[in-house]
Length: 154
Image 1: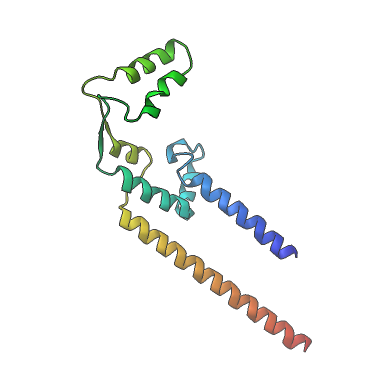
Image 2: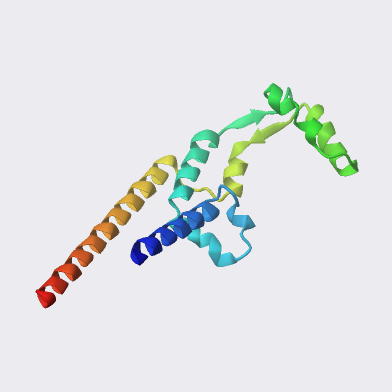
């Protein structure tokens, strides 16, 4: 029916919006329209992604002076384009400075992640509750409309 098709289209549009503003593809700083970054507050994917980022990177410091970590990452400089601009990057990746460290908190700050993992879980639970309440209210309304239609026709 038309209403099922419309519901499907709206669900897909909402899922795409969730994915785009979740912070996974674009950080809030990269969103060019200022008000769009506030849409991330209606994205469940954003809360899940922020929780995963916090769990993985909060208060971690990585030493990059010894190597790039794995054999797969050590192949990365070979894939950089040839050219003067990339020679410096390639040189730094192949021979990192002795005092090279990466503070993962900078990554969290860049992506504007300020809440704890527990807060992210709380946001997801609240999000789920709100959606369930909205669904229940919609079903009640639909049931009431159908009952009213039967009374008028019956």
